[in-house]
Amino acid sequence: MLGRYFTIAVVLAGYLAASVISTTAYADTVEVSIYKRRFTPQHITVNKGDTVVWINREKRQYHSVWFKEQGEPEPDYFFPDESFQKVFNEEGTFPYECGPHPDMTGSVTVRSPDQQSHSQIDDARQQELTYLVKQDCGSCHGMLLKGGLGPAILPDNLRNYSVDDLTVVILYGRPTTPMPPWKGILSEMDARWIANQLKAGEIVTNEP
Image (cartoon, rainbow, N blue to C red; front, side, top):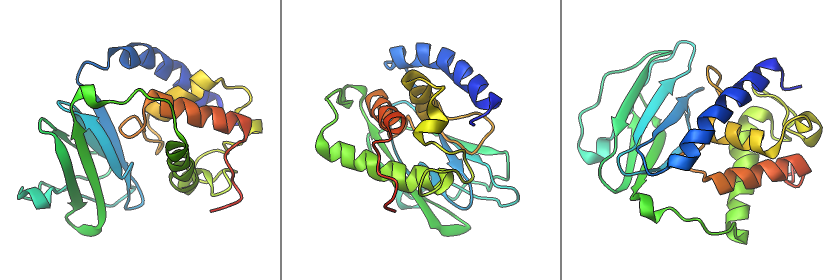
């Protein structure tokens, strides 16, 4: 079972989504979670003017978010439960790394709001989303989606939750848990497609 907390998170996120999804013209805040020496999501796309917040969810490890290739000085380290944020006002793709752990890398792609695509999910995008569920979601929910750090997300475990509920959780995450918001790299349409596939058991889970 996903538990009572998940139900509460869904309800709270639902109120948030009702306003945020319908007001995409405004600047937004996108969260990147740092856990087990990994940026999640590792690569995100945001709109010009958005703010990205990196939250350290480690138990003991400190990190930094260093846009080294842009010639910026390394910022101060931040420790568990602390965060670092940056506003992106220029379009382009900006790679970054963790200063004390250079094997930890990520990137932020900044676009103008009118570049957001509202097209249907084509076959190529479906393959990308399926890969994301297997690899990124599977790293926490188990490679077979039977549970790990996060709960199982097989159809039987999701039967009490609607596609709308799951779409909101995918987009906005679960506060105070390692579950990050994926709205930085997923559109509402992407998240709804994933939710439908999980509910129907259509995403193949027996292949890593």
